[in-house]
Image (cartoon, rainbow, N blue to C red):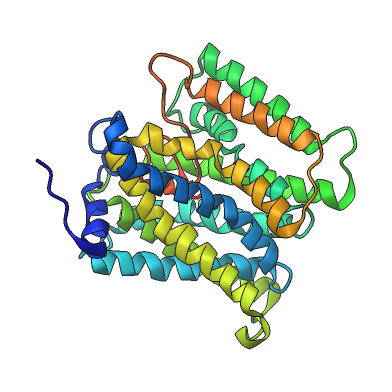
Length: 358
């Protein structure tokens, strides 16, 4: 019989057992959730959907006061501190392999820092709803880069069909028949952020998988530290020192902390637990809930409007993702998510969160 360690520290320590990312597998198997186990993983699964879906309203609130680069730098700094605290509590440690740190530069900069800033820039021009939907297109960008650039995957008829459907959904979300000016630029920035995730995910599989015995939490911490440092440097160069925190307002401070502590820290630990209990495939299906949460919260909290093309396009995008990832086949493959969680998913599964996980 499995005996759980008591307390919050014991719960966090369970994430250390998931050091399987380097081998390309999660605990060596893909677990199949059972009705009896749902009470153990479902709360964390739903919490992640809420945390990552809510990230877009927090970004929207923060960019009203802070420069987009400081929104990215602030949330990453908070995320790095949170993940370092998790390592301390679980008695884990950062990897010492310099080559591993070198290979984590691209995921840290291109796969985390830049897309976090791009989403913030984008949300200066578009709603949090639009940003949340664009985030769901990450999986559509992964396959072309995995096949054509990093050679970690092969095209199949199913994947090509799903990809084609997904990009039709992208055009509908974009509203190509009427999109123009500031709105178009904002949407393109959000799309570019998702594309960055799509580059980083197969890169990690190609150059990091199998090269380290570090735990998933440790690898994610490396990624966020690199992202935090690079974001801070970019923010200082592009916008100068940030305004004093005393001028931010409680809502902006709370938003930055929520993005970092929850989106990049606690949600990551929750995701690791879901993977351990229910498997990588089940954990990755949070991808389908994140845009739904973003839409609902955008309407309820920020009173944003929802035009007909957004939900229709989002459904088509998600259908394309599901088809390309084999969700409807007898042996479904895990769905690609994004952001920081990239370092713990099976094979080409991504992060942060989404990211913008997040």
